[in-house]
Image 1 (cartoon, rainbow, N blue to C red):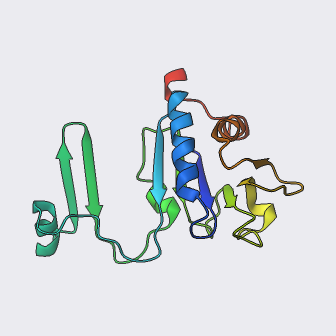
Image 2 (image 1 turned 90 degrees about the horizontal axis):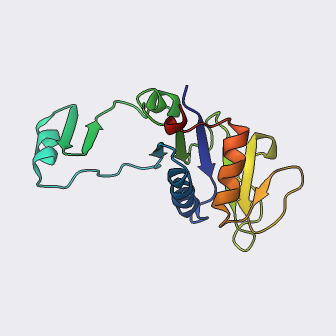
Length: 166
């Protein structure tokens, strides 16, 4: 089973910035990484007027765009899928990083900025670690820019092994 972590925090806390840093550090070490971004409202993933958009507008339930080196799948759903349902569709990676999904039962890293926030969004007992500019007793805390330290921690804590090591 592929390990999954969720990076959570308030809006504009720096979740995406941290995830990008983690991806860079993980890739540098030979890990294959998938990401899942949760959004609380409907977003358009296709370009209006393009062929795949026309396919969707005509009623296709699943649209696949394939080109050399990439495959993109847009699948209509009658309901919001759980993180586990999405993760079940992912293969060929060493780690899945979800952005959001604060209510899902996955190990979480919270991004917390003391100048912006007054309290954690996640109960401390549900946190794997915190990326912050302040200290929290009893929870591993990493600087907001310490992707290397956080990846070291994740590799050890989750017993991660890159596909290239296997």
